[in-house]
Image (tube, rainbow over the protein chains, first blue to last red):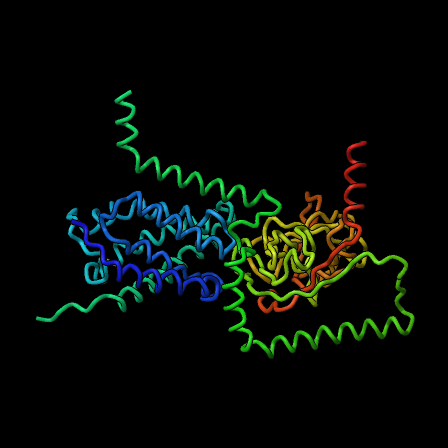
Length: 171
Length: 271
């Protein structure tokens, strides 16, 4: 049984996507670390939600970001790929294939976040920066951008998801 | 037939994945080739409206920088005016070829490998795709697409934008193109090896196309090298415009662009 908490998803939508838009290119550190934390919205879509639906949501999310960054298709294509592999990657990393998983920080904890979020964010950033760069030219600079941005985005996504996680009840 | 349908049904998710990625590829390729793609970019009314809102909020914190820029530009213009009144510079006022419009920058990036600006003027203010954009200190870019009230500009910091330019001292024709690394530098191409160039030479627009007027500064040569078997110099220029603090720019309208362009195409067709 899939549990979809609409309230939580709306909260994710606001915190990850709506807040990202005014800060899309304003949170840049050292001219190379870009914080694209809107990807958190896609990564925290309900586990085992219909995969086609997930991809369509990811596509629309990407298009919104693309409209603001003048890159039609680039963010969208990366988001679709992440949406396509996200559940499979979760199974592989967390070793569960149980539908009764409620995807949030309480489920992942620190080590789970690193295993589940970081590689997907890294893939997403590889696609965005490589396509925008038009290939692998000036590879060193491109790679440093990807690496720093992925770490930076991961830290923001991790922090925000930690803040939004419902507090586990103490017994 | 049934097997085919079954096959399609089984791979429907993967099919949708390919379809969506296909749409994305089409968007990516289409955007780079279309001259006026007003759909899905920052000249879109809703997107630009939101950008204006954030830009207006940030403005109060930058008043000092804007003031400094305006003072500097004013100084430059005063100097030129003084030269004119002394009779040092001749002004040919027989033909009015260019009109300038002012515009406010509401969104600007300079750290990416393809940078764009959004301006608060659009087709209602007679802005057309392809018009040149200059700042107080020099060339900024070229208009990419236009909606009713907003325009998206391809910044000089965009790998696909090439600007016909010349070395001011020797009048050698060359091309400026950004190499995607530092927002302070661009590459200078096609200066033949028999022309002597120096560090510090000013690079200006050539005026050979209908986009920019002649002699608008682009930058100064900061380094160059010439290998023994090179035909052209490999040079870098430091850009005149500081793209990190761009607040107000001017759009250049060439009144005779249509006439010049049609004559040039006609000549090419005759050849």
